[in-house]
Image (cartoon, rainbow, N blue to C red):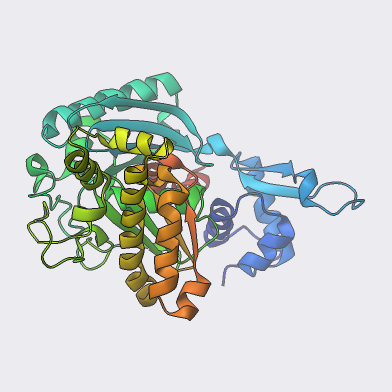
Length: 398
């Protein structure tokens, strides 16, 4: 039981429950908190008063367009105070490192990035990440007690049992490296690490297109193709952390050898890198991924056909996951997502065609709203997800 006795002190579990609801449902009224938590109105009122005095929760008016006409004053809503705590997000792409310091609302107060050959230079990349984080913290001027930790996304599978990268064929220099321990040693702060598709899923779930959904598939169409899974509101990693590696599912038994060592993986026909190589062969001129996307914008028939075919192939692969997992929403992100309807329409059509009717009719297929910020915000979200517990402990220590 988490209720507060009449006139008695608040139970720690009561504070935590309300902080957790306000993190997951910002801009919530007192009446809605009563419904969400099952606590009494008196308990919610007493707890919110304490949290406001502690500087963790603030009141604000609801938007005028969210209330009926002639209904009087806008409703008073409650949210966590954004600058009550912060987290650092680190995004290690194949050719860049990005760092963002985010508040509790997922807003980046500092956002920095640098180009680097991450794939082949792990030590240099980790050292550069250290410098970027220190520079960002200096720019933000955040008190140490308000910094919760560092979340880190990397473009490779991570063994959740050991913390090591399973990247022998994907990031050769990083294989069996423990990136969290390496960054903790450099920065002296706690670090959590996930693969890029997982942090992208967390970003869109906490701050983007998947907010409010509990069953989410996020598919990242970049140099690699991966899916991040949010099931029953929580990140699903599988037994050792490789759940969602859809890019290495078989689509053509006689296809090309994939970088993972298997033949005919989805990545070999549908990744932006594979599509750029296809156009290079067909045109006889070098085509980069950036040029591929420019050609799509220029209505080049060959580029649009290649991207549309890739969308259909990804949608066909996702249709199996839609049948198995029955998600509410599929969010599409990564470089190839910038092709918009050219990739999204055939992807959606393939899911509708090859999934069970009941499963396909229940799922929305949409573009991500965070763009290239999904991974860095999701990396920060790894840490921010624990902010209710951290804030509750802060009150208990007072």
